Image (cartoon, rainbow, N blue to C red; front, side, top):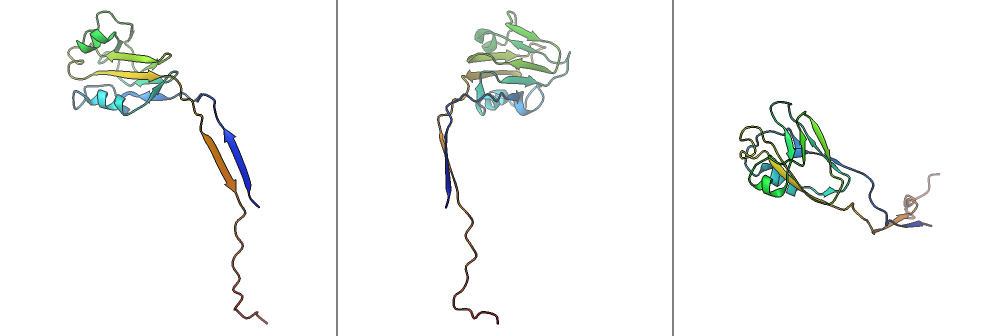
Length: 146
């Protein structure tokens, strides 16, 4: 006989993720859209964080409004991280914009935006069936040892 286990999960996923920005160091990328491509390949949820790996004095991370992101200006930062590496929490849903305002690095592609959505809510049903392993087949045609 088998055992059937059914469970219904309607709870929020409490596991927070830390995303390494660009899956590497925060630096001048090989293409201008490198960080855009990176962020569009991930899902970001409330409570996650971004990890910017950079050397202090050579790079920084400035959180800015969209207008300053689009024009690569960091004159009115919402937050600034001058010491690297830096971990930045994403506490609310919305779009977060980050630039590096060292020299012309932002124009060279050292900028990223991430879209944060609410935590994952799973309403999936999980069905598991446990059955005993079948016994080895005995060939009824074979003569018995004897």
